[in-house]
Every structure is written in C-alpha cells, then in structure tokens.
Length: 209
Image (cartoon, rainbow, N blue to C red):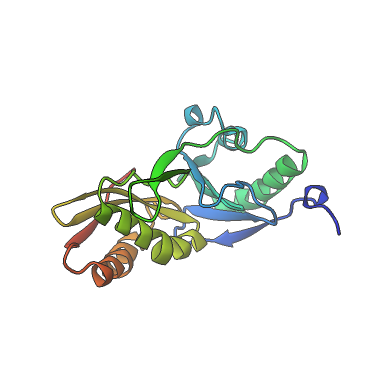
C-alpha cells in the first residue's frame, strides 16, 4: 500500500455561496488536528502560516481560511475569478507538492470536556472559551448541527458571546460577507439553537470580524 506521504497533492475547485470566495480542496489533509481551523485577513497575520503569506503576495487575495483539507480564498473586488482561478489552483498545487510548510502553529483554547468544566482539552476551534454550561451546550450544538454544513460551503461559524438570551457568533471564511449569510443565520443557526434550547435562546446575531 502506498504511503500517504508519497502521494502527490491534487487540488480541485468548488464554488461557494459567496461570489467573492472560492474553495480549493486537496486530496490530503492540510491541517491534521481534528476540528482545527485558521483564518488570515492580511499578510501581517501570517507569520506562522507560510502558505497564507505566499497567497497574499499574489496581490488579489483578501482573506484566507484553512480547515481540514481545503483553503477558502476570498478575492479583492478588483479581481475576476475567470482570470485568477486557474492560477490559484496551480499555485496551491505546486506549493504543496514542493513540500513547503503550510502552517507552523495554530491558536489554542481550553475547551471543557463533556460540559463538566472539571477537565479540559486543547482544541483549535476558534470558539470563545465557554464560561458556563449553557455556553458549552451552544458550542456543542454549533459543532454538531451547523459547522459541517457551513464547512461544506467553505466557511466557519464561531461562538463569541451569550448574554440575556442573545447568542453572538462570527461567520468566517466564505460566510463572511456572503449575501445569503443572514438567511443562514436566522433560518439555520437561530432556528436550530431555539429548537434545542427554547427557554434560553432569544436571538442569534453575527458580529462582523
């Protein structure tokens, strides 16, 4: 059986609901840690992400989101996907197959195990660390029922705050600035959280990154 380390990277392209974002999917993991994600909004943030730095240097990249086996690239307004999609796919494929570093370090947060708050684990979810059992339950629901669908669209949803019945989240990656983002927030996220926590949740709002 061929070792996975000897298999060459191949990259294919997926459109996202956000016309400014495109998803570049590899045949191997880019981040090995389960549930880990990384997002970069400018080149100054890329000291631990060599691939993101190189992508920003192309000049037409506005935002980069990396999770599992894909990279979501959000372009600048001036760029046209017809002109840059193939260039990006070739660049990412060649970069990976040259053995270049992808990410050297990820942010870490302590997340409680089984909502007990007696034991914690480190995971790179980008969620704000929960301060109560209800916040831990909200994060659990986001991860189980909402994140997989959002991830399929090249995006990420993260928990930020819960106060007076209002859940604040951040829509990242392709979901940031997406025209259908409000519908996703209200008809998807808010509806699911209210179904599972009807006495606790009044509203879900998005905090702009």
